[in-house]
Image 1 (cartoon, helix red, strand yellow):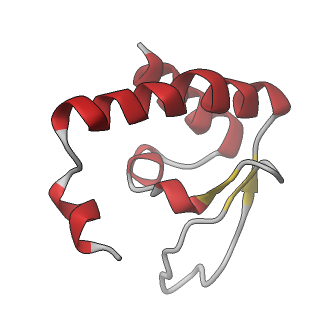
Image 2: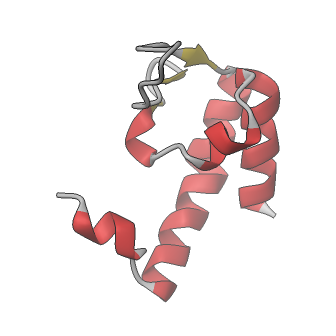
Amino acid sequence: MAPAKAYYAMLAETGLRSGGVLGLKIWDLDLSFRVVRPERVTSTKHSYCLFFSEKLKEYLTNVYLPYREGFIKRRGRPFATCLKT
């Protein structure tokens, strides 16, 4: 349930499309300033940031991120994140 709620909340609060939310990396989130900074560069967007609410920050910090860490510990790190240093 935690991933779905985080996904739909990010869609609603940031205005990102579904592929944009699914493509986010953990380092794209700055929880201290409640900002999402996707690292993607396209022909029309070179750099941008999106903001989210304090309520979503609390949910991500207290529910989603602990859930994510537990999932990673149980399943192991995904192959793509193992390559990034």
